[in-house]
Amino acid sequence: MNARIARPAAAAAAAAIMLASLSACGGDDAAAPSGKAVVAGVEVVKDQKLHDLLPEKIKKAGEVRVATDVPYPPFEMYVKEGESALTGLDYDLGQALGAKLGVTFAFAPQKFDGIVPALQAGRFDVAMSAITDNKDRQKVVDFVDYSQSGSGILVSDGNPSKIEKLDDLCGLKVAVQAATNQLDLLKSHQDACGKAGKGKIDIQTFPKDSDAQLALRSGKVVAQVLTKPAAGWVAKTADAGKAFDLVEDPAAPGGYNASPNGIAISKQLPELTDAVQKALQALIDDGTLIKIYNKYGVPSIAVKEATKNASVD
Image (cartoon, rainbow, N blue to C red):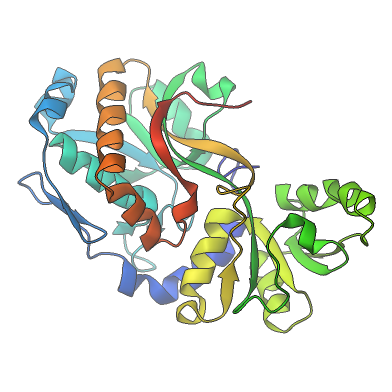
């Protein structure tokens, strides 16, 4: 249950909300030619020791070529529809990593299913696109893991039904997009509802996440289950944060069935992997990473340690 094993249709719904609010939360963070960047209100500066770890080809080029599949809110988005300027959690993190390493992280759109082949072919050095770290991908790329994400629960503002965890959905009407991992999650939880002596979840399926959110707005359901990053972004941006709340279950901080998402790096560039891992850890240690995640409404999916190839499959 994770962000980008394949492109879920949830992105389309969140993208619609994103377009109405990006001018307020994107585009203000930018890398400077000096190697500095202001990201999520934090000035990030070059660490010469980390810069020295970079491969010579990266130092000479002065940039890291980054593949990303746009849009996939809140990870990657366009600042304005029809224009090429990017924003999003991955983009901001890339700018912070680039500033810390003293190079530019140059993002370029690439269809998701072509990202790993493009890395293998040497067209890009890195991919930042909410990619799930798994064993199959590790055969051809290395991952520096920067988040844990699974499924989350979206409720109406104020959480009137007092939903605190997945078990609280038993016996209630819950919206979910059809043909998703989130639907599978709800179906698989029905036995647990029965064993707990509660009624089964009354699962209401919808063609799109936006349809499910309309049902939640109108009171036809008490909750919606979708990817936690998307749920956090919708809660933060819909009606300026006044329409929905994100349920935070302490037992599942990254979401239910969370898996690691990683920065994919060409196996031909092990020095780059090492440098990115150390730069990410520096951003964790100084608090920059959590501020980036807070900006997009998903602080709970941030990692506390920059691991390498931490797949759980």
